[in-house]
Structures are given as structure tokens and as C-alpha cells.
Image (tube, rainbow, N blue to C red; front, top):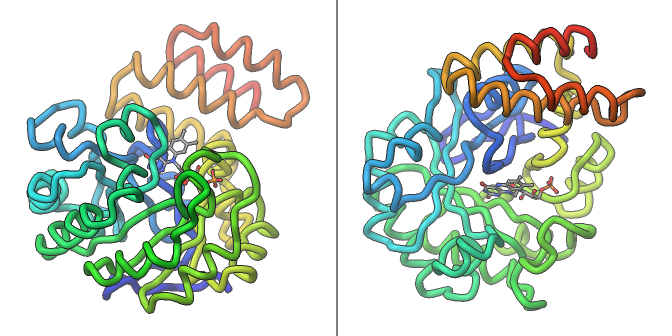
Amino acid sequence: MFQPIDIAGLHCPNNVFLAPLAGYTNYPFRKMCMRLGAGLTFTEMVSCKGLSYGNEETKKLLYCGTESPKAAQIFGNDPAIMRAACESEALAPFDLIDINMGCPVPKVVKNGEGSALLENLPLAEKVIAACVKSGKRISVKFRIGVNGNKIAREFARLCEGAGACMITVHGRLREQVYAGEPDYAEIAAAKQAVSIPVIANGGIFSKADAEAMMGRTGADGVMIARAAMYDPKIFCKILGTADVPLLELFLNELEETKALYGEKFACVFMRKMAAFYTRGMRGAAEWKRKLFSAATTEEVAALAKEIF
Ligand SMILES: Cc1cc2nc3c(=O)[nH]c(=O)nc-3n(C[C@H](O)[C@H](O)[C@H](O)COP(=O)(O)O)c2cc1C
């Protein structure tokens, strides 16, 4: 069930992917998930407008290493700007570029981006086709619909017809945000409608969830989001890959985050990650309180040594 997968000639060691997560899937986090077995990882969504303005903060989101395979995710709604982004140097290192057509955040939707494209099919098609013209591998991640209107099958066909080489279907409507059971039947309908690889996403928090998702949808792979944020070892648990002690993972992530993004960011970010990793542990509330009063990465590392 969990096995290697090829996406338009891109070999991925397995079909259990790390989702794009705004504010979380920075390079050190993606690298850690790759080490734990993730078959493909995605940057968080990156604004094509931001890239076109040469925004330094936007470029930082695309920091990456030489590991392969790796994917970036972009968002926007202007076909020419999106194609230019795909052709840009900033995205050149990535093996695959994913277009976000699922984001429910009001600021994004108001701009006609993310899940707003599920309500404007002609524009969605133009955006995908323009990005495909860049010559890069283009995939699309989308929700099953908006306002109760389920369109996964139709949208999957649109993506394939416009030249996408893979789709990821998040089995929830926009208005569900992240709540509720994923709609397995809608994901299955998308899978049956196309011949490109279909990755299923939503509500996978254990190996059993991943197996149920594969079994009930017939998808070619799964994508893990919040479960990886709380416990990156979910990849080992699903894939049976070698376990790595949590402390080693954490201290590595801390060092790399500090080296890339600086002391201040690393302190705030890694406090939050440590708090996630303590979920379910005895005394988690007290550890969390101590973590959030740590003022330097040194203090965070010292606490991590006590906790993990
Ligand atoms: C904090 C957070 C940030 C997210 N950022 C992105 C993003 O940048 N791009 C995207 O396509 N989806 C994003 N998502 C959605 C996830 O990729 C995923 O589709 C969703 O969480 C459902 O999967 P899950 O039930 O396994 O969490 C985000 C979700 C969360 C919770």
C-alpha cells in the first residue's frame, strides 16, 4: 500500500507526503520529515505576487537544500505572473510546483486566490495551463468544493486537462476549514475520473487512518498535515522507517532553524514546536508554561533536554 511512486518521471521513494503548512514547513522541518521517511515534502504556500516583487521574506520561504525530490507550493490567480514564478530562479531548485486551490483564509479568498479558484473554473484552468507552459511539473492541491457544492470529480478532470501531473484532494469543503471527517467518496470520485496520480488528504493522524484513506478512496498516496506538525515521527509510524530519538530530532531542528532564520525566530518557533511535541505527555501543561517563558534558544534547548 505504501510504496514508491513516480510523478511524471519524478521518482518518490514512497507515497506518504508532507503537506504544505503555512508557518511550519520551513526547510529544517521539511528536512527532518524527509529523514523520517516522507516521500515528498512541500514548502508552505508562497505568493507569486510576492515573488514577482522580489520580496525577501517570500524568498526565505523557499530556502532548500540539495535533497530530492522536493516540491514548492505557490498561490495566486494571474496566469502570467504565476507562469513567471514557475520560470523564476527562486523556484528552479524544486522538482515539482504545486498550485494552491484550497486555501480557505478570507484574505486569500477575497483576492480571488486559493479556494476562490474553485468558484472560477475558467480562470483555474488558465492558471494551471500557464504554469504548465513553464515546462515544470505542475500539480494542484484543492478542496472538494465550496458552499456545499461538491466538485472534486469535475475539478480533477479540469486539472488533468490543463496539464497537471498530479492532484491532491483535501476531502473537505472550504467552509469545513479543518473540521469533520474527510469525504472519502468525493476523493474516490476524483481518483476514478483521472489517470494522473491522486493524493488523498485530510484527517490522517495514524497508520490506521492512512490505511483507511487509501482503502476507501483508491488514492495513489496520502498527504499528512497537522499530524506531522504535532508528531513528525508519524512518517516512521506509517512507513516503518527507522526511529530517531525525539531529542536528537529537536536539537537538530533547533540548530538548523537558528542558522537559517536567526536566534529570535528560532526561539519563538522552536518553543511552539516543543509544546506541540509534548502533547499527550504527562505534565505537558507545566512544560508548555516553562517553554513559553524561555527567552533564548539555549534555554529552549536546556528545557528540551529535560523534557525529551
Ligand atoms: C497551520 C496550517 C497551515 C496550512 N497551510 C497550508 C498551505 O500553506 N498550503 C496548503 O495547501 N494547505 C495548507 N494547510 C492545509 C493542509 O495542508 C491540509 O490540507 C489540511 O490541514 C488537512 O489535512 P490534515 O487533516 O491532515 O491536517 C494548512 C493547514 C494548517 C493547519
